[in-house]
Length: 240
Image (cartoon, rainbow, N blue to C red):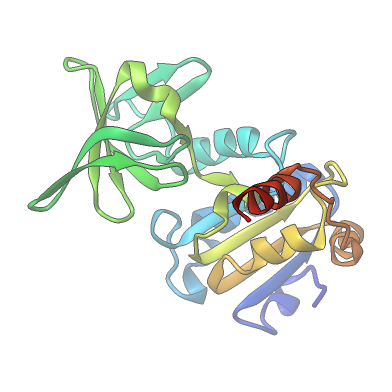
């Protein structure tokens, strides 16, 4: 399972593990794998097949910084490509984005079909930024096309990298799973399993071997304390 060089990578064609502790080197691996290194393994292209997952939003290998680095590498600034800054985020034509809240009212078209509603976790690509109309056109993975007013951009985030939590329920041909130093609450067997099972064809795990082994051995699932059980019992008794 564990390896670090090209010979090790050739042993299996559907699972690679890169044992690396240095965060800058991990980032370099993520960027090179996302850009073109995987074409020889199945003609994989980032915007069609590949998703970077990480347990955390924070740090060099959290989603916030990974998204900046991946955007710079995969969709860099270009005088011929329109962009719109919203807060600290620069949205650019060609960016991969995610809807981060349920919007039941937003209008969409899909061929001859029309409807409303884009929901938390849906992924898409920015196809057009219209400065005159002050809106962004996003084509989602299921081919729905929706338009966001500049004032609605808080509903979108970059999705070159997303958290494992956000990826639950989704599958991708290729998953690059980053394991960075982070809170022990996020380094669990359950989260590792969730990240691994998002991959349909190829899984690549990059991180310190000790951290990966810690996740494998960390089966601690925090018990959630709620009053739901007592409320159900009370309602049941009332009905009786």
